[in-house]
Length: 88
Image (cartoon, rainbow, N blue to C red; front, side, top):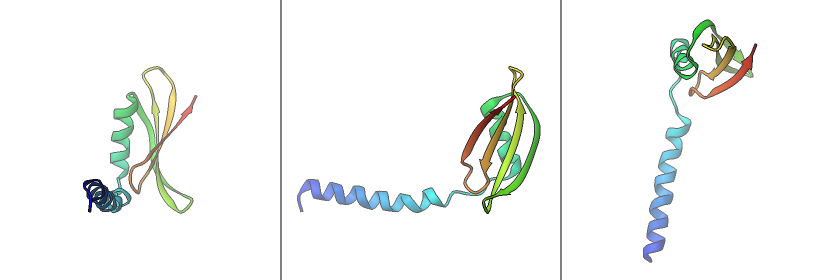
């Protein structure tokens, strides 16, 4: 094998080894979701709850920002992916 082929083979193996760890992220609790929201947006938490949406658990956190706006943060409980939605 040429050097280039060896390098590409190693990169492919590393990529394949990383894929399972990306999809197997740990679930996060409602408390962790609240902490994420406070760190991201600052301000004061108005409400926080966990609901099921499309068969998946989602943490909904509402925050009153320091600018006086109410922001809703949706965080996927399975993996912690965030989605921001602004509300007044």
